[in-house]
Amino acid sequence: AQKITQTQPGMFVQEKEAVTLDCTYDTSDPSYGLFWYKQPSSGEMIFLIYQGSYDQQNATEGRYSLNFQKARKSANLVISASQLGDSAMYFCAMREGSAWSKAAGNKLTFGGGTRVLVKP
Amino acid sequence: KAGVTQTPRYLIKTRGQQVTLSCSPISGHRSVSWYQQTPGQGLQFLFEYFSETQRNKGNFPGRFSGRQFSNSRSEMNVSTLELGDSALYLCASSSRVRHEDAQETQYFGPGTRLLVL
View 1 (spheres, each protein chain N blue to C red):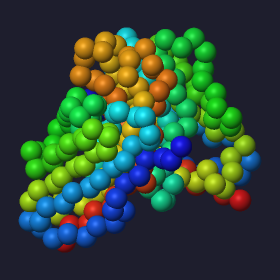
View 2 (view 1 turned 135 degrees about the vertical axis):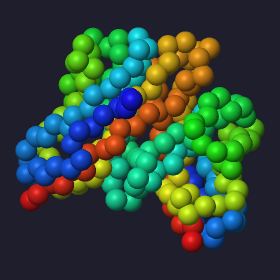
View 3 (view 1 turned 180 degrees about the vertical axis):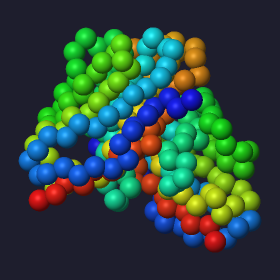
């Protein structure tokens, strides 16, 4: 079963508008972390935002915010005021592991990604 | 601080050859992870090294191996290359040591694009 699901393979967004990228996850581990990364055409993965499973508030980082709905196991990324430079692939990822004795370490499981194209 | 660096950036090999990719983590980071990215399989975890020990391994054949040196630099090796090994190989480093350091993320390098002919 897919642990991370991103149902939107691609989407267009008008410059200066907001866009929401969907991400649902599946885990039985009570302690986990959710990450969003941006990958421009150059290939490098750029960290955007993090949400911990025990965090009470939704994470925000500048124009990025995470709509975390734990009961629904969703962690949607919201990009406000889209810019042309936001055109890229966006990946949702999960890190599991509640005890250091587990082998989980820093392993990330990624979703399939969503390609965003910002139109001027 | 300098970011994660990977060498070489581009590589062309032929089937049956072997290849070694190198990754230098951010200074002070002891965890290095490797990922393979292909259009068909997406991003897949290869392995993670921490303090010169492999801590976790993904579901890849034994042709894929790695190691980490005392300065935290890491190398991955792919022996007997196959066409399907053509991919972007990404290295990531993290300063996360304790499981309580939940917000410590992984920072990725620019990747090595490997083409197997």
